[in-house]
Each structure stands twice: as structure tokens, then as C-alpha cells.
Image 1: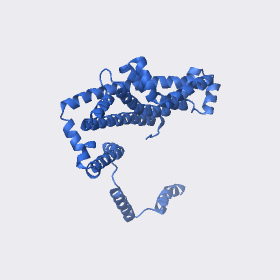
Image 2 (image 1 turned 45 degrees about the vertical axis):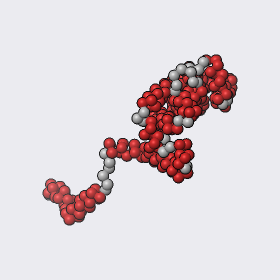
Image 3 (image 1 turned 60 degrees about the vertical axis):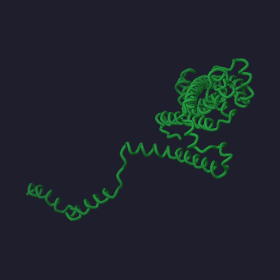
Amino acid sequence: MSQNLALKAPASLAESAPSAPVGDAAASAETTTAIMAARPARPSGAASVARRAWSRAFPIVAALLGIIAIWYAVSYLLLSESRRFLLPPPHQVLAETIGNDKVIGPMIAALGQTITVALIGLAIAVVIGMGWAIVMSQWTLAEKILYPYAVILQTIPILALTPLIGIWMGYGLPARIVVCVIIAVFPMISNTLFGLQSATPAAHDLFTLQKATKWQRMTKLMLPAAIPSIFTGLRQSAGLAVIGAIVGDFFFQQGSQGIGGLLRTYTLRLNMEPLFLAIIFTALFGVIVFSIFAALDRVVVGRLFGVATR
């Protein structure tokens, strides 16, 4: 008798358990299918990357189109035909310069020299700036002594120092690099120092408890904490290095000319079309350098810290 009850119990429980009607299950499946069909498909990996790239490039493209539109408006609406040589329209600038080997050849060579000066000056500014900041971060007395000199380098107009640099060092490539370094070094000093001092007191206390040496504290705590600030300074110094290279070229005319020297030559001769092409090349060079270091900032800082920087 007990065995029969044991055998019937599962059957009775199965019969008493509620079950979903077949029609309801079919309706639920159809509803799920309809929802999945109505949901927009997610873009593929390549499409997502292209969309992000376009979203970042669109403001630059829009700005360039706006500049060209303003340029045409000023040339044709504000300037009379007799004074249009002061601001020739873009198509005229390109037509009279791009196909002219006497213009485009020296300009490419000058731009190459300016790029060399800017990159060398930036590299030296990065090394000096980071070393300067590390020394100040280790000793309070060093910060009190050295930081005012960094401020002086930033506040003294470079145009006041340029004649002295030319007299002391000549007017060639080394003098131009020095001008570039003086202009570009301060952002590396200030941003690196701020980053090195940004580690929290709790983190410093932990390293003190572990009896860490100064070298361990610097390499494992302070420098990793300073990476975002270092890349911010690098991005700023990169733009200033371009300006410094052009300023050095503009004032130091001996030897081979940089793009700044050509700007001065075209200005004195009123060669407006080559002058505007040199300005365009200079602007493109600055934008490319800034964009490269901004992208490097996003990749490195974003990968290490999980933060998307602009």
C-alpha cells in the first residue's frame, strides 16, 4: 500500500503543478521575436570605430570649411578688386603656388627643417622639464629655489631673449633649438610637478609602512600617479615647440631657412600667395602635431587608467 502511494505521489504532484498553455508559450515566443526584430542592430566593430573617428574629425572639418567660407567672403565681399591682393582667395593661392616648383620646393625643405627643430626642441624640453620637476618633488628646498626660475622662463618675453641667444650662440640650428626649448619647457615642469604631488597621503602612508625607499616611492607611486599630468604637459609643450621653431626661424636668418624665415621673406616682398601657403602649411603642421599627442594621450591614459580624455 505504501509503495503504491509512493509511486502515485509524483504523478499526482505533476498533475497538480500548473503548466503554461501551449498558446501562451507560442505568443511569448512571437513577442520575443518581434522585440528582437524591432531592436536596432548594433554596429560592427569597424563601423563603431569609423563613427567615433568621424565624430572626432567632424568639428575640425567644420572649422576648416568655416575658415574657407570666411576667407572667400572677405576676399570678394569686403575687399575691392584693387585691394584683393591683400587676401587672395584660396583657389588663387593654390593655383599660383602648388604647381610652381620655385615656391613649393623651398617651402617643403623649409618645413622639414622646422619639423626637425620642433621635434628636437620638444625632446629636450621633455627631458629637462621632467628632470626639473622630479628634483623639486624630492626636496622642498629645491622646489623653493628652482620653481621661480621656471616662472621667469615663462614670463620673460622670448622676443627679448632672442637677440641675446643669437649673439651668444650664432644664428644657426642650435640657437633655434634653444628658443624652442625655452618656450616649450614650462608646461612640462608645471604639469609633471603637479602630477608627482597628486598621490594621496594614504598611499604615501602605505609606502612608509612598507619602508619603501625614495626610488621605490618615486617609480611605483609618484610617477604612475603623474602619467595623466605628464601627457597633458606633453600635449601643451608640443604645440609650443612648433611656435618656438617658427619664432627661431623668423629671427635667425643665417644658414638654411625654415618656414618662419620664408614667412619673413614673403612678408617683406609682399608675395601674398606664397605667404598664405606658408601660413597654411604652418597651421597644418601645428594641428597634426597637437592631434598626434592628443591621440597618444587618449590611448595611453585611457588604457592605463580607464579614463577617456579629450
